Image (cartoon, rainbow, N blue to C red; front, side, top):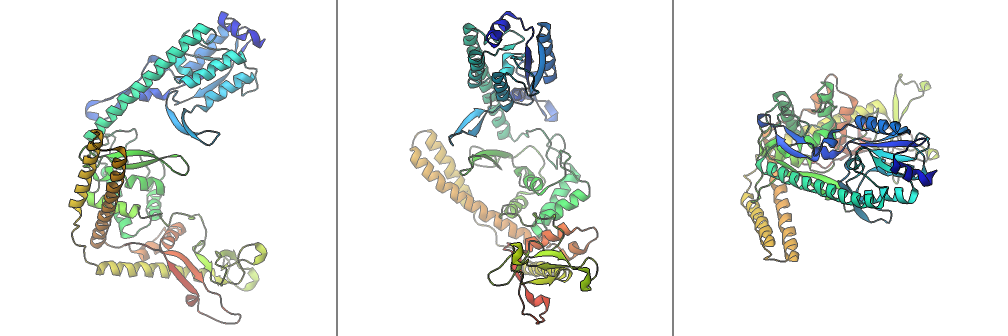
Length: 545
């Protein structure tokens, strides 16, 4: 039967055969020509062909009707929503090397099923139908995979319009030409889009789909209520509040992201570190992780040909100085106070055994009812060796320890607040000229390389040095702005935050974790009575305030 499937499909006789359809809705629809809707500032896209706007439901319906009119059975649909048949992604090959490939697991799965002659639902599979050659592929490598399936496995792949013919030698040759032209069309469109995007970037025109939090749908006009929330959040972070305290307040008040989702630390952090906050046009740079080989997206400031920041066509929420100070806080290393907040006890993850040679985390456990303790009383203890964790030599009362943790955290914040009040505003930053000169040097270097006045080796060596100077000066300026904002601001009142109505244990834990790296509980000899405060040795977190 399999030997004549291709010939019968060529004749248009599908009687008694089982066919599946491949329905792909191409992301080339958003790779089409972009245009602005005038005063609204919105961007729309023209689809490349009429076929590109054909929904997957229509493709399935047309494929089913085509097969059934010719006596066949339609048994399955392989759906590929929002899948490009042209865009390549970086992948790791079986031999460990990396390459760029069009990634379409559904398409590859359909070919494998066709080779085996079995659909995912268990039905026999004799052939695959698509609406048009564009729906099958725009990638020559994937076309050759399809040709292999037809030629060597004798399983037909056809389309409805008649432009795809993999059943004959002449048809396969023409298919290669058509796919090559479609591939070039996609490349041309992508190139025009890149030019369009760069032109919009250089003019500071906002792009993208979902509106940024803090702005209206036009991405230019401020949403006053959201912008005020951002300003208060930025100020609280610079005053010492934790990420978790802010997102807990927002989520409790029902404030959502512009997509309608609950806030997370990552979402808030990425929103606040966006250069658009201070009016700068953001630019996303894709870099490769040297260890994993994965693509990493880093949002930076778009700059013009002279190295100056591109100013966006929207109202800023923060001043440049405020945003740079905020970035210094955000970029000062891992953000503490955001992990393990599902724990049920304040000291979990912070208390450690102080017995020499141990250092294990203390774990909470309920007191037995026979010990005369009130209901719900608990201890923190270093578990016995029989459990495989800890030494079993340290134990402290839970409620009393939690109370002391609160006092230590609040006292530390008050101490730092007093220190900040005593520090005068920093002297004016004197590195502006140096920073401007470095950026001019970088621009001159790039122009010299474009004109082939210097070698590539010289270019990359000098560029690395100049960029290192630029990063150092940027960091120095951001640190200065942070000190200036700290001198002008009011430190967070942790005592008020700690005991206010509605505060959660998770919020209190975030302040404790931001203040304490660990709280070591010293061991005492049997029969000795040592005040709990003398047994707790705080290891303070390193912070710049």
